[in-house]
Length: 126
Image 1 (cartoon, one colour):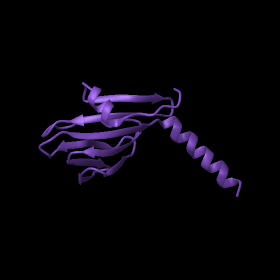
Image 2 (image 1 turned 180 degrees about the vertical axis):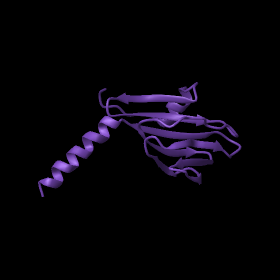
Image 3 (image 1 turned 90 degrees about the vertical axis):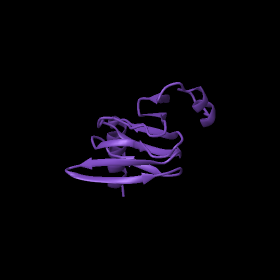
Image 4 (image 1 turned 45 degrees about the vertical axis):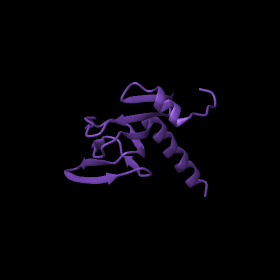
């Protein structure tokens, strides 16, 4: 994929699906996830780490890892990191009356492993 610049508002206006992926390269993907007011997310845990940035709306996000359950309220400007294989409803339940919009970045496991190898090599060099 060549260098590109994206207009978030324009991508959102063009989207007719709940999730619009607009970058997909071997190391990661980026998309826009939209939940209407009161809608719930029913995702299953995945093998990739994820980062969400809340662009609009308010939501309650639920995590469960190793028997420990946590809930957080998120709003525009909140950034959420979800480790691979953590059970989550993300962005969870849209508690606002309007639409919740989330920029989603999914990092491939291969990219994470490569990054860890690079960090280890650099660390040994010190």
